[in-house]
Length: 303
Image (cartoon, rainbow, N blue to C red; front, side, top):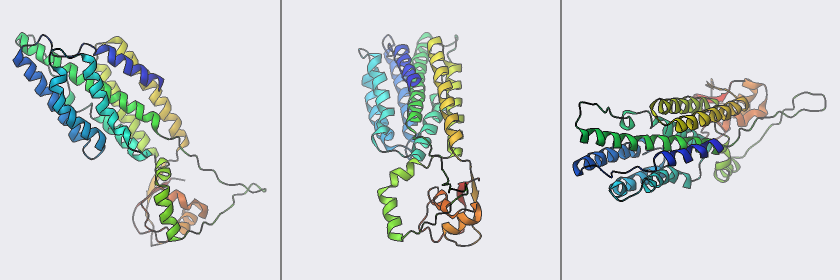
């Protein structure tokens, strides 16, 4: 959280003077059109991922002209873009959703729509100025998205390391859980958030790490500000350390398919020699009834 906050401070310093002051009217219009196109890209990327960011990006699309026009400050533009990314924090998030949002926030910075445009000496000075301003707006969108991704990484709940009960002789005890359909339904309704918090998987964390690293390294290759480069490096180091710690505590999972319709208790006994590990199966998959596990692929611990 400390390095994520430091990155945010550096972003605000680098883009404090962002605006369209000094550009001719037609150049301002060109930069505004580019900015609106970038924001539309954000809307499309988050359409089914984060309704908060989607709604906020649509509002920003209409407000960006006023924010970037002459007389407005870079600070107001930065705050508006930060509010857009942060609007997705308003709803309760489970671990799986947070992981997906982190991947999308990182991935949105890598596409063609937010990539810098070439500024050539052969271009007219007005075209050069327009593209340089558009590139700064794109850089602000990319860096603030990376900051939001790292912030959401800190919000992932710590993994729950499963423990096996040990009896006085040092042997594993097998606890048979008998559940009633009504109780099972209540637990899914009342405790859905708790179950979601335990749903972050090895595969999701590895994908988050790869996408976030790629986004940060891509931005480091583009930035001309040394302090911003170092802030990105620090947040990258800390994010990798954080994810490595989580991976050490999360069980690696594989896909297994039951040979026939069986209760989760029986599957746990067959696969792990421990019927008490029924929840290792039911908590990671969409289960209509734990007494009748269908013949379909299930995501379960590798061991």
